[in-house]
Image 1 (spheres, rainbow, N blue to C red):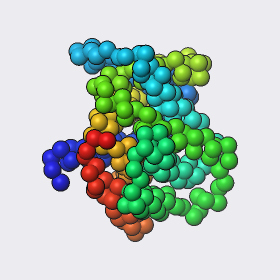
Image 2 (image 1 turned 45 degrees about the horizontal axis):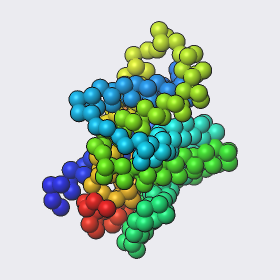
Image 3 (image 1 turned 180 degrees about the vertical axis):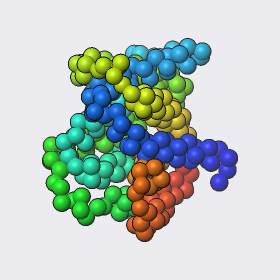
Image 4 (image 1 turned 60 degrees about the vertical axis):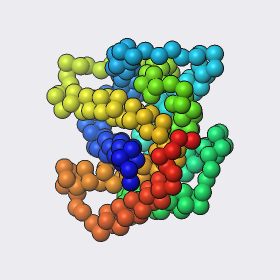
Length: 297
């Protein structure tokens, strides 16, 4: 593996690590202190302001006639629908159901990539995606938890969320060939404000900031600065270098890192299934990424 490929895979691994940790971090904030929709309003607005500050040092003009609608679709699928439906869906269904459904995202990326931009689906990629899915299901499978039935409405919302984010990963890639990653991400989040404010304004307005303890401020800072600003930029940067399906495949690492976080900081026990699941996931990701994945497509 050359240095360029190493940097790309390191960035994608960090994205999964940050997301994996975020599952535990968000429990501190939502919904006890801030409603999920209200939190998303703060997350999108503050992240947009940060992106604009960074973008101001090297501004780049957008061809709105050619790319305006694509940017709007990216804002809708990659930020608004993705984040709003995920939180609402998880509130309705069981955590097990939602987590397993989210692992379908790489499969959905392959389908969208084939339909929208004609990305070639090879047997190796398909096999790698299947192995990753098996690993994710192994680590998320909890017989006792499965006794609690999730609400089918929540399951559908989580599935639509995964399909929406998968669509975003495909739609945004051509924009990365025309503009700098920071330019694209800045405008995607700015446009997304229009979509999320009508949904989450009432919850955002109801927050009593004076009553928030320090742990909530730290958790919000992590979710906004790391999981939003850093993660979306890293995803955008890697999409310049690799296929959408490769970026999607790294989602399988999230359950691994989420479990590691729970074991190290929340007292959960390490089991043989964790090792077995990790083997499936890493082999699956390797198969998806190994062939010409560092080439632009």
